[in-house]
Length: 75
Image (cartoon, rainbow, N blue to C red; front, side, top):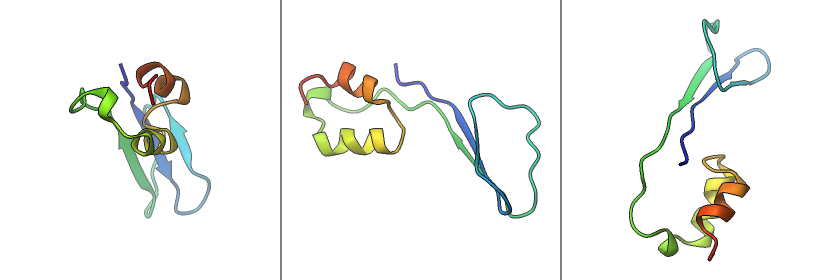
């Protein structure tokens, strides 16, 4: 439902790169590798989730605006 896999390389010297698929991404000393994997099924009822928490999820790119509207229509 919210499955996400994202690889982000935050370069010590250069731009940040983001990949949805990657193979053999070269890293240099000081580069930071961030891997975001699919999340769990959640805890509790979706109706009980606060609007602030949903907005944080969108801001942090855990879900898209479209997903927020689809899965949290009452908020």
